[in-house]
Image (cartoon, rainbow over all chains, first blue to last red; front, side, top):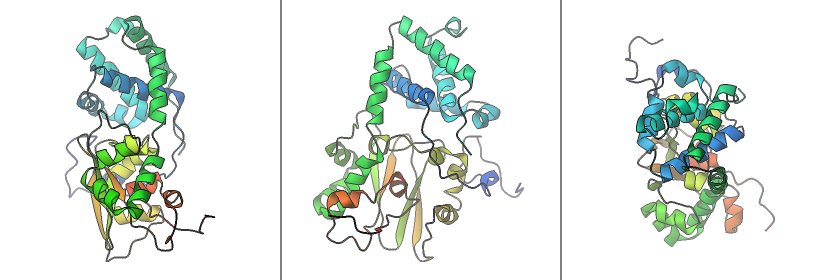
Length: 98
Length: 200
């Protein structure tokens, strides 16, 4: 861990983050799962219907705790963000998710 | 590393959410299926055809560089609700590399779903810090006198690269040229390679 440089201001702000300096990039692109494609399509529909904006989604993903941000898959993070935005807007209630 | 599967609780959460939205008349399974099919029609082939056209048609090249969104819509890309598309012109001595350091902003209308590596934390962190070593992991080794310009895609503006047309492709048809272009060349981690000429 390099002590000489300050950490990025937020966990998601990864540009130049020193902790990945020696992490190779996996060049594979495995196919998306059915879950991934459903979440992706649902998000697109909700955006089209004016029920979520890109910025709301982004803020919700960036607000995940670091363990969740690092541990969840890409579309699991999207799903968490969609749920958080729809709850905050009152489109759905907690009882829907029980 | 294989892509991890979503957790069973995530799959259950999605189904509860979809059921709740369907019960309120907000989203139906049919709409989800239709949106998914529309999304899957976008692929790097659209971007590839745009690059190939730009290589042989100077007027289209000028349009592509001036107004990427309009150029993309001429190739059937659905740009409605999409941020503007910017096109980065590689030149001799100048190479472009695109990243989204904050997440995964990507010109989906002309490239399709962003690849796993583009969304990876390692790519996002390293592309802006050590681009030449990142490029070398794809076998792209640029001479030291070639400048590398790294451009951050954002929620407000999406970028793709217009690579240099490789030598040895003189006289090629547009479709042959398009076959050299992949998502990796449109992001800038690889250069188009002519390889053996395809049968005309």
